[in-house]
Image (cartoon, helix red, strand yellow):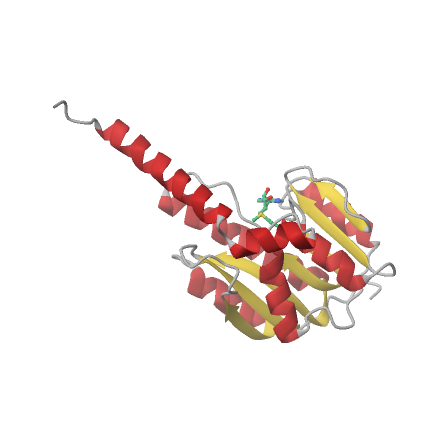
Length: 224
Ligand SMILES: C[S@@+](CC[C@H](N)C(=O)[O-])C[C@H]1O[C@@H](n2cnc3c(N)ncnc32)[C@H](O)[C@@H]1O
């Protein structure tokens, strides 16, 4: 019998992983629940679980959702803040419109997109920052870890400059090289940083969420 080449083995492994993912997805309780509840993605339940335990939307009117597509966190946020609130979502990808969501398509790390976001806020600080951002992965571990850590740092920087004093932030991070440094950085900005793995987050996934509570310092130039 002819031996399988390394490339063929790698394709077979990838196909098996894809098949496993599809099968897990179809049988997933949260996928069914999301379809029932009208959420665009099962990710909604990760945020809802954190909200149920910590009331992060209490007294919140202005929310920024970084990396919001396809939009389930924004759906949760717009419901929570109601018609008087403001939710701004940013993503590289387009999304179908969501009532009361101000959507900006673009890379939030680019100055132009960040300026658009700040202009939309009209100089005001936000009450809550949520970020489920996940970069496109190259498959090269070192490169991907640096990319993820770089994005997380920029999310924390955004929170540092645009979140009200005492405000909260939820950020997706991944276990890996820079995890401890990122937690340390978050602890310099917030009074308390909790590490959460919501039940809706798949065990196999190395994603984990930082619930950063009570921002310590406020920028002075904003209208609040
Ligand atoms: C896991 S998805 C977010 C799911 C979303 N929370 C939901 O509930 O529907 C991660 C998103 O981050 C976006 N993303 C990655 N890098 C980005 C960047 N630099 N700027 C804006 N969005 C980015 C991706 O396009 C992707 O849609």
